Length: 148
Image (tube, rainbow, N blue to C red):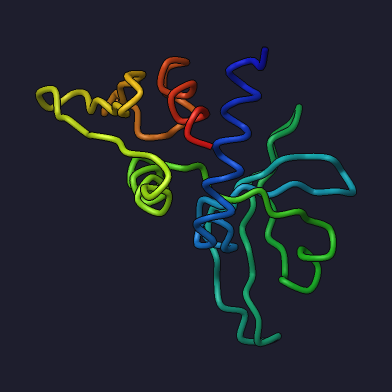
């Protein structure tokens, strides 16, 4: 039996593969430095007029968090793009792309929750106070995992 983290990883990878915009090197994109083995997040992208390519401001998450600026030529050979964290709009777009295989309904529960349900009866609830997929309940992650 897979854990919530394993199911979340599988769902997130599938969403990123179906929505290539989540893999663009822009603000909010998560990256992994293969040399130092640190994860980071792009905080800002600037135009570099001297070198005619972008410069990235990256916050590296390590034992001593660092914020560094990198030229595209320097950064790209060392990093693996992880992608942006999926949010509700990304999950809805992903569900829309796969709707031929799965029938689902979305119902609003006040202004706090959205309920996802499928014809097979299982369901999950998205807590709107938490915008990212990784912040959601195990019940919702299980629901989305079953749709893979």
